Length: 175
Image (cartoon, rainbow, N blue to C red; front, side, top):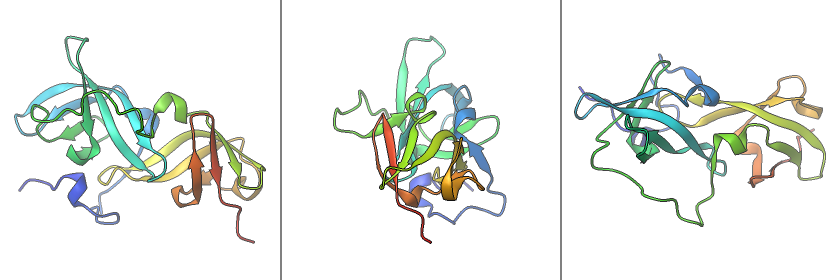
């Protein structure tokens, strides 16, 4: 029985075997097309939708090294520790990104400065913990965390108010 695509799964719908995958570990993983049972390429970048707190697009570089295909997250079945499973890479490709899309590549997320709405420094994003089936960010992992985030070093995506390539703003912690 085929597993449902990520778009059809709800958050929390993951199996008891659902595990977290680190954002920084996804780049370089082989991509396997389950429709034709072949390797489609290697993940060259992951684009995050920071407002929704999930992966939006995988950029996949093909074996020839020239062609990069943009695969929407809805076609990703699972992020495994050793491979990414997708459905039907032949039929889908987003083409070049729209200028108004607010997706952020890994290199602009890692090291991103995080501040509260009041201007207090929270830290910098060091990585993100992803759900391997829903592709939702479980938490952003912080480096040099301050204030309410110092102890856990984790920032929940629901706390994000706004993000740009230069800065992420989060809600003030509840006291």
